[in-house]
Image (tube, rainbow, N blue to C red; front, side, top):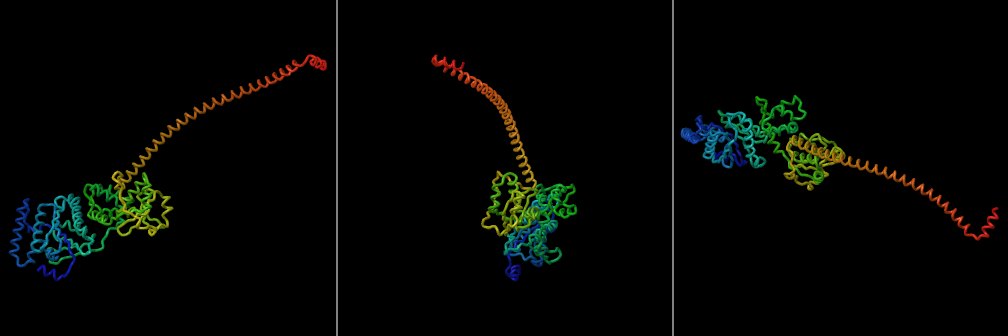
Length: 480
């Protein structure tokens, strides 16, 4: 019967049907912490039901909510079936029995997935662990096939705890999967087709850091969460409260919407390619500028970060990003699933002078290469808080170095001053010595002149003595 029904439908896409499962297959048989006995009781119930029902359709409809929906979905060969069950022994046994029915009645081998933390006894565990596990399993199943054109994903929310229905529905709407549901007292299958619902990343990007911190810590004080949203007006708080599951003690955890926001942001992540200009700037940078460059390269694949750090700049068709209250900037453009980092600027003056007039067409795509983070020795900051701490550490390091250099300079100055004072004393002594030498030189010059006169007089007398007596007599007579 199933075969003929499928044949009438003609060729169809391969389907992956993900079904939540509950305990309807038990028919109300209580679970008493004995899995094997419980499994046998459920099999016995189904055996008697099959003997006492008049048709195959009625047997499936009365066996469980899951098998009723399988019949309406026309489950059959070629379909993949996943059964999601709670984190309980009762849920696992029921899912195993439903899997046996799928194999026996529809010739489909089901795969069971246990959702850790999914139970009804502890609401805190349900919100903090169960929902996260649910989304992780859904993404694990659908991720490899989500974008395959010849493959269809159907989320069947007929069975299982009703508390998970809104979360699975939200996942389906955001990922544009078909959602199927069959009412308990109706044979009609309700199918919600894919609809174009998406996150307002530009608005939510304002809370990107708050969401990341909540993801890291798991639980936070509500006011601490809001303090991490820069410039948050009071009137906007209700919008961002949709990202939180509020608790009585003033704490909060991420809501299902925020969880899906993180999933969607991961899907919209881009691959970073770096151009020769930007690579040269990165290689030449040091200290705080290099830290900021690495942080931007590390975070720019994240759509939330891009939306919150986008900086409008006239005169260029490049996208400009700024990490915070600093002078560093990144100029880039997106092509397909790749983000091309064209320029990295160290300060306002440089990018305000260089960026106007630059166009995407100025850059040769073949010149860009995959950006690979630096080795482990150069730790990249994961959050704005880590960036602040690392930048502060770099400032303190530079301040310490400056202080040490200043002390060295002061010591050198004092030493130079001492040497200068000694040189001034020595110069004074030399000047005094020079003045004494000049005074002595003057006296010697006068003495020399006096001696020269004496020599001249002696020479004159000597000439007179050497003349004959008669010349001296005539000379004296002449004088008289």
